[in-house]
Image 1 (cartoon, rainbow, N blue to C red):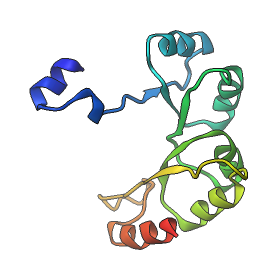
Image 2 (spheres, helix red, strand yellow; image 1 turned 180 degrees about the vertical axis):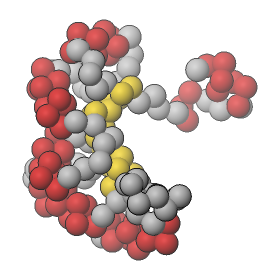
Image 3 (tube, rainbow, N blue to C red; image 1 turned 90 degrees about the horizontal axis):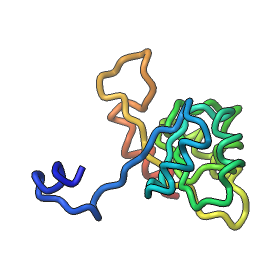
Length: 137
């Protein structure tokens, strides 16, 4: 990574490595954490639930990276710090309303379906600005 950053003329302060920990045992996540990895992505709420609970004593930043179903939004709002696949205002409202009081707001990434493929998640590019404005409120 350092070689790639140097070749690109970038600093290590400009990047964040997100380790996708799905299907990885808790012991592997602990080992990676001890080696300096602090951000982990999960796309199955039920799998993440046990990992987040088991590793609660570590200052891990959890990212939800899968397509979020409305019936899973409460657990994501309560357990994660990031959501990478936000593409509907309905889900944004649910996440906001279900976020525990006193918890910092969720960091979110808007998922955009640039190719317009119906089988893929994401908002159409034309709707991004409006969705971003609504989320910001």
